[in-house]
Image (cartoon, rainbow, N blue to C red):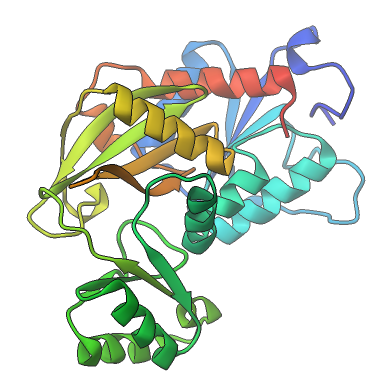
Length: 304
């Protein structure tokens, strides 16, 4: 196996070039840009499709048939699949960007919120409940309107703003009937009025590479839901808060979502698999190239 082993030589100390694997569910514009940036640097790079991976959990070493690389960049949109892959690679001593622990924290909104709160980072008040009646009490505690979110998922899907207990009960009952145990974990967050936009700050390593405003008339301002991206200056406040948020979850590569409140900036969540298609349209910064460079640094340092 060509992957680095604990306490062994790092890939950059080897005579052969570093091999970069990019774990993907499918190739979006971001992943295509990352692969192109790696090839432009002369890096041996290959997409690793999650559907093709086979993990021998009893193996003491990674099989060379489908995991023959020195460092893995996680760009998988299937959170459960990436979690298993990253945890297995951690056991085998193969560096990953991000770590299995960081991805686990960020793939679960409740875990994400707990980590941010524990670090004293300003974030909307959030309650978690496990029954419809208790979730309604949670809505009353944060006040109406309240926001209901799934604990897993992305792209602003299955978000709801409820204006009273009857509407809340209807949506909560519907969520419960969806079947998955995740939908019976009710994540209730206070609604914060914002100026028709939020901020996506993109953190790579120890710096905020770029930021963009995501503007929409709808209260959900995700780019995946049609929000328009515009340049946002990386102010000292944005930089400090985004870096603190990433440190709280242990992320070295993430899109940090912030909102402007009457009391200043607050963090909504940290996305280790954050997309940057909209951000690319607002900046000349080589985001894909910076991601590749961070992956190479991860391989050199042997971070797992």
